[in-house]
Structures are given as C-alpha cells and as structure tokens.
Image 1 (cartoon, rainbow, N blue to C red):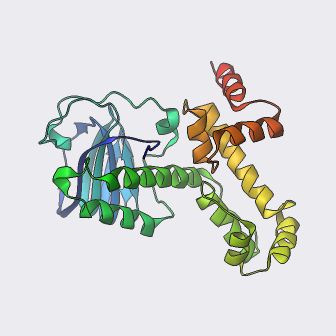
Image 2: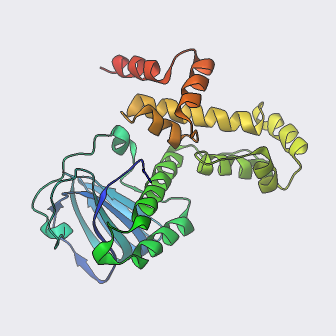
Length: 278
C-alpha cells in the first residue's frame, strides 16, 4: 500500500517529566511532534513563548531553536523525510546531522503549537503506535497507516486553528458546519449531516440555506475547493496529494471539477498564484 507520506520513524515514546527543570537551548535537527497528555510547561521555539497544557500539539522543524521549562507527560514522535542514514541509537538531544527540509511548503503554514479538535483520535493513534514493537516500528505494516492518519489529522486541525469561530446561533447547523470543517477530507453524505443535526434531510437543507444561503453539500464543496486553492497557492504538493487532502480520491475528477468551477486548472491556478507572489 502506498501512502502520501513515507517518513522514517526516528524515535517514538511516551515521555514523562515530573520535575520542574528548565532544559538547555538546542537546535532542532529533525521534524519533532509532541502531544501533551498532561502538561504544565512553558516552551520557547525560536524565541516565541508558548504555554503547554493537556491536548496541546507541538511541531518543531529542523533548524529551529527550542527549550522548555515545567512538567509534562507527552507522546514524542520524531520523523525523517530525507531518507538519510541514521544511527540505531538515535536521540533528539544527541542527533549530530540536521535533516534536509522536507520539500513541502505545507510546513510553513502549520502553527508551532495548537490545540487540535480530535483529542481522542490522537490518543488512539499514539496508543496504537506504542503497541508496535519499538525495535521494528519501521518494518511494521501498521506504522505507515498510522503516521499518515496522524499527519492528515494534524493538517486538518491546524487549518481549523486559523478559521474564525462560528457565531451563528442555530446549534444543529453549527454542529454540521463543525463536522464539515473537521472531516472535509473524508467521504460525507447528506444523510451523514442530517444524522449529526438530528433533522431529516429536507429540513436540514431548508434550515442550512436560511443561515448560509446554500445547501450543506454546496457548503462542503466550497470548503474543500477553498482549501484546495490555499494548498495550491502555498505549497508544492502534487495535484493528486492536494486532491486527497480535500476529499477527492480521484485526481482526474478533482482537476476536471476545479476547472469547471474556476475556469482554470489546478496547475494553472498554482502558477498564477505563485507568479504573483514572486
């Protein structure tokens, strides 16, 4: 099975630090992810201060300077996207060679620290990773699936992090909108959305149109295409990868539909946007 992401797991563990000791400043050598299970900790990344608590997700990239102070209990995952030779006794604090940056601008739009919406899903993924034999984690067929699921969640949740909060008053409609924003990369039907709102399909469509002026499915499509435009403009991800991130399993259909709506192909749109920023 092929995955969109195929990183090498350098290190994965659940790490507990119960003493309030400040760490020394270090240069980050690889892509590091921390998911806080129980934290009361300050962290500095490139001089910017962050307060960590339960549910915080931390992303550090090669070349950044980081240190922290406080207590925490977190899952620590370190990934290599460069396919370089690595030592079997790898440790974040002793890594000698800095990883080449992963060729994707998507990392530039991810926040260093944010609180994702899918807390239980992250816990489930990390617990399953722990169940994999640590000595053979990169040989286990489950690892690639779990890492890809995690990275897709991170991208979706990080994007939601930048969205303004919805101030609409209709609670069922809010629930539908929240579901779309958090699951737009998945297969979603009108029946699914009606079940979430606890309304029949026709009633949901009527209520949704009163608030947003369009149907729930049209809202979903608009959300997907707006995100596609963002990825095309701000990253060099392959078109098929952009399509997958936006809920389209068939890249050809995505390209055709994008061109029908915007009268320009995804590739042409990317060139126009990236040319304008040069």
